[in-house]
Image 1 (cartoon, rainbow, N blue to C red):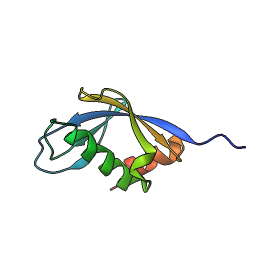
Image 2: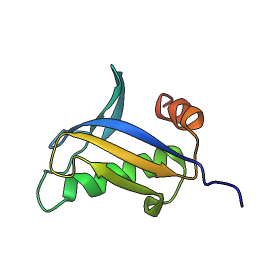
Image 3: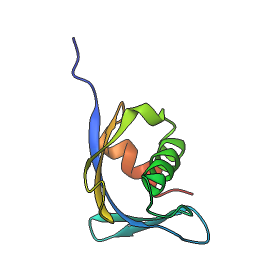
Image 4: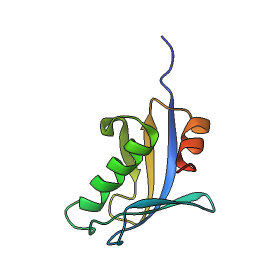
Length: 92
């Protein structure tokens, strides 16, 4: 059985933004704005939804490994390799 492709993506989350969007890289982090406030996991849900849409994968293929209650997060994304994820994250 082949090992499943997965990659970790470092995120700097900016909740309560006027527009939800992936701003691009800032060092080793991707700067991501979401409209939702950081209350009851709303910003995290919107982040996962936004990343899943950009990477064309299901929301269930993404988990927050570290930083559930922090602006700095590490997402583990299954079903995509690091090179493909990086290319998709940097295109509009």
